Length: 310
Image 1 (tube, rainbow, N blue to C red):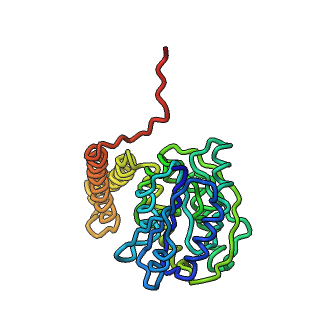
Image 2 (spheres, rainbow, N blue to C red):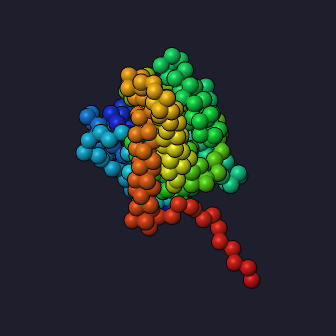
Image 3 (cartoon, rainbow, N blue to C red):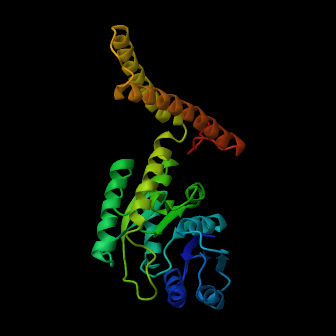
């Protein structure tokens, strides 16, 4: 099978029929499967999907709402195509861009083609400005330079998509996760339409979650396989500062000064204890990391090619 199209759905009853129509028109002549993942809809979304499903359609229904990232992960796990495309179910992404993205992938040899929403049809203050700030923060922090991390429309090679390890709400960070497994990523402009039916699931409340997830991504990107470098470095710095403060106070004590009432003594003791805790956390994180890889027989690397000379 050439292509698997994964679409997370939640309360998109009115968008189901036009979504089916748009995908079928856009992908005519391509061997594809359509995987719809219902993320706990409370309207007739599931019923409408079942009514319109054909032999190419697979519907996965969650027993409750788990979030877009989990829905996307379930769809990718079920996908059988050589390429995997993801898009939103609200018809703001245009399925007609998928064949163009496949052509871009073949032209550039990329592992991931990420959509960049051209003339984005969203509110300025609630969607565009927070998104621009988030995109800038992610670019500067991770070193993965894309213009639009929030666009769901992407096309992946199968092996890359299957290795993304999507949890929580990390779908915005898919390009960073792909870069971590060594994928080549390119961007291309895609169309973006205003939402016609239903209500948006996004808002300003997501901003704080994005910042929290960004801190997690930075840890995963830089220290996932070497957590001791982070915790150990911070721990040694804290322990060293505390010991210097305590040594200074010890000298003052030996010279006859009273140090029991000085806040500096409390700071020195706290820094020493914090340093010990950070170093201990580093040891535990190292053990957890090794257990993670060894228990699942995973490797902390990905081989692109093995060549044997004749």
